[in-house]
Length: 511
Ligand SMILES: Cc1cc2nc3c(=O)[nH]c(=O)nc-3n(C[C@H](O)[C@H](O)[C@H](O)COP(=O)(O)O)c2cc1C
Image 1 (tube, rainbow, N blue to C red):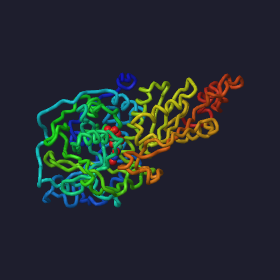
Image 2 (cartoon, rainbow, N blue to C red):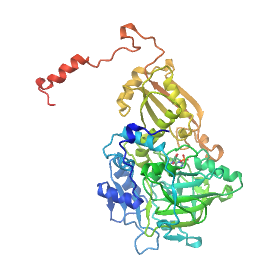
Image 3 (cartoon, helix red, strand yellow):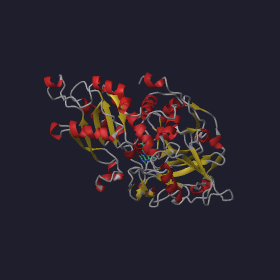
Image 4 (cartoon, rainbow, N blue to C red):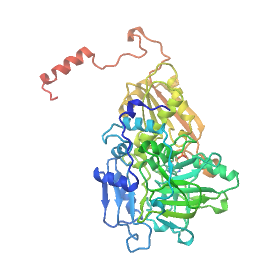
């Protein structure tokens, strides 16, 4: 897709080098809070993060004193970084925008970058190879991985990593965030859905009778989890999009026990293989999920059998607190509200839906609800938009409910959307449309439990809804409305508001 000149001229892509460069940039910008007091990995870290993330305004957190992970303990790491992307200012920093850029600019920047490609470069070695552990030396419990929520089924190590797999047909790499917990010292049970890109890879390896090689990458520049958690089009490597965001190729180094390429200056890489044989499965779940509920109940799941762990000296472990509730936001909710809107806008563009003027995902539902603002020029445009979104694989876990409104409605203000719902929606006029029995999120508790079995179905089951809150173009244009289909609104006429503007102080009001 072509560059979007409206935003691309204002972007200053910035590479931070690694996680440490990003942390230093945050420190200089006053965006980091460092905690020297001792904290417990079991529940306390999660509760601190919950309070700090709050409504998407708090700083990033660097924990430097974690119980059982002190300098004298036989451990791999004693620092945990989280919250790097839990507010819009830091997302703006990552995208090369001013910290106070409006959300729509963040969405436009994402839309632009996600359509660009900068190929990664191969390097022979890098800091991530400073320490290498194999065989009996592998012990994942040496990492300060929290039990983020009190009811989590384990210590969730995979919350904000990049999980890298290869398509055995094309050799193309895919990177995603897929949850996983520590099992035994060298096992990492994961939640693997066949409708996700690594699930597609997994099936191809299994069809060949082979285990799937996998690498979990922890701690690099912020564009890694930002791209890993986005539905970048199938067949496109996230490394190429990360290169666009940072304005330079991503330096990659080969894993020790597979052909997977990983960022050479990552903090930690866990290499392994996932076996399709159910006898290798281990118990996984539940986990405090993005829906705000515990989800993905405990059951036997696929396992990464670890073959090697490579890391920098004194690595900083990177994780995040999942689980969004109203007024309790986090990294997933803040990034999803930008990134899922940018992805949806690109889907609409690729499908040729004209007139789109803004796209927004409210932060509290991580992109489950999508709001599209457009300038209608013909009948059926809102339905065309929804059909394009729902037909895309980007819709797998998101976009269950879609609003489409006209371009006079502020989609960042729920009150405005609600007004359009009140007076432009009539269920008897096909303004509410269902799309039943589609794929969907296995974690949404509004879907019956029996429809959410990942092993049986590979995906969930959703009935999607479009609320077409645009003016109905089936209505006849009316002479008394000046040729419009809807009556004029009560906004004062320009000749009257001009007078009031001029005379405002005469009435005794401040500016
Ligand atoms: C913090 C966080 C946790 C996530 N956990 C999972 C998960 O456990 N399983 C999953 O399939 N997707 C999860 N996702 C969403 C995926 O990362 C997202 O759908 C992404 O597009 C997957 O990459 P893919 O499109 O290349 O498959 C998570 C996203 C975030 C931000």
